[in-house]
Length: 261
Image (cartoon, rainbow, N blue to C red; front, side, top):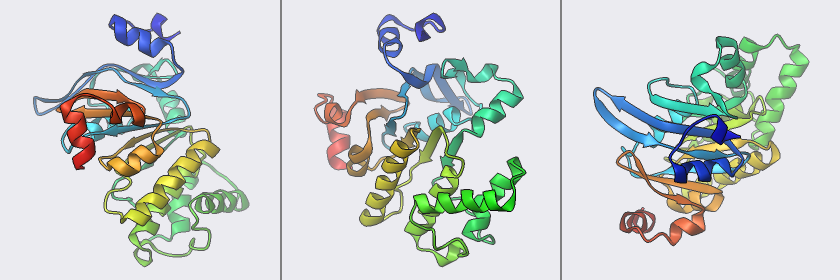
């Protein structure tokens, strides 16, 4: 069990050890230029659920996401995936883990000179020597998951903002990942596109039995799909729980955040 692997304060240990977590952090701290932005955070990300990290700008949400998705090793403390310490993985084990993850970047990060097919196929070609038929099948299924199966020959600039975000999601889903990490996926989207994207994330999380971690400050849409929420302020967790529990939280900051954003 997790409590045999790491030592946590009593209350946190009891909470983390009794539930099936895919990702946990122990005393996670992150600093930039001698300024600490995350302060000794202990998180438990449930398996095959959607966990959303919320809070105002500058509260450290994206810094945590970058650390747990292995985009950054600039942190102190420990991160565990299925009770394996991320810092103790061999280079091959780390690569194998990354091949089980998908990342939806805030700015889409699509290559403008490549078609949607080529954007998705690029990473697959890099890691696997698949025959063309199998590659075509993987790309087609990825686009099908986001309702873009007829757009594989389009370039990103030919798409609307909502379609480009869905194309970026398709790329993140191409390998049927075990973990999906999303950084502000609803930012810059109109309410209809945001709702459609949230529905796609929720449906794919269930169909692929993924563990999804999502950063957002969009309260309404996040509460619609979240299984569990961590609310941050000034680098610390001020509240956590299901959407219903967060709505009833007595903390003044929590109530202000969820009613004014």
